[in-house]
Amino acid sequence: MLRNIISERQEELPVSTIGKFLKIAAESKDIISLGPGEPDFDSPPHIIEAAKKHLDERYTHYSPPGGRYGFKEAIIKKLKKENGISVGHENIIVTTGSTEAILLALMCTVDPGEGVLIPDPGFLAYKPSVEILNGMPLCVPLYEKNNFEIDVEKMEKVIIPEKTRALIMCTPSNPTGTVFSKKALEEIADFAREHDLLVISDEAYEKLVYDDARHISIGSLNGMENYVMTLHSFSKTYAMAGFRVGYAAGPEEIVKAMTKLHIFTTLCAPTISQVTAMDALKGDQKCVETMRREYDRRRRMIVKRLNEIPGFSCTTPKGAFYAFPNVKSFGMKSLAFSEWILKNAKVAVLPGTEFGKFGEGYIRLSYATAYDLIEKALDRIENAVKKLKK
Image (cartoon, rainbow, N blue to C red; front, side, top):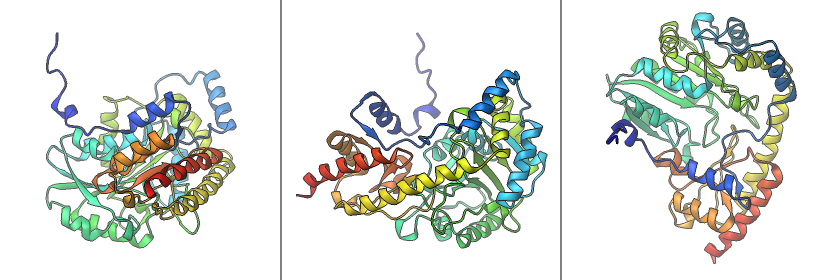
């Protein structure tokens, strides 16, 4: 029998609680889950019909590792029109979701022992992706008082000059819902140029912005074309999570290296997903706005209700589909409080520490869940926490 076969690299990865909470929620019919980071909408009908059509046309073979030509053409037009980013075919790689693009970009630019600046709290895959490659995660604390935006002064305190290669950022943000202002992005851009850093800009939630917020791609700012890998996904915008397709756009040298590595990872993004995603880009965009409006309706309700529950304090997210309320007044750690809510309110939420050390004192609630279920879940939470506040 094999012994000690599991690598130290894997053993040292952080233990995630998200699987545990989602498993319980899936297996227990009486639990309402506000945990998923996936749209509750099915893919729009015209996208499903396009996929069926392409299957009949036998799009069931491999694609080029960098992505299909026609799909890249559609991406080029989209980036120029909507993001203000001008690129060519040589600047784009199509990937199996944008999470794969993060890993490929890091594999091509970061050697063992080199540093990567990571937002904390931030998407739970960032830190492990760096650790898998034996890189050095340099966590940049984000604070509620600063609207959870990246503060250049905080980056200056954690960066290791000459050893830091990249910065990962996410706007609109998971888990906080922050949409970075142009001023914040300009400061980050100046910092990246000063320290010669690659910015890996995760923009998976670009279409999900609310109120007066506006999504700006840092890659569109003057002088940033050689410093930014812009990552996009079809999972959130078009509710195509199961299609597993995304893309990255950036410097030709890095894209070429990522494409070379792609041959040894997944080889290519699924062909059926690429041709269907191309139709999504070219087709009617009303479905995107329909979903965004419904998320906005849920957002306004969930924030209002949370702030009416004694002990909760929730800033209003301007993007994505998450609320990130402050629960410090309950006197419990985030994990313990999430477990208490699960047991006593039969509602699954995620502890803020799932997203980093500085997520302590917060929990994440997803409003990618039906309006009536959110209402019911908040009623349960309100009734349950009354016991704690007596």
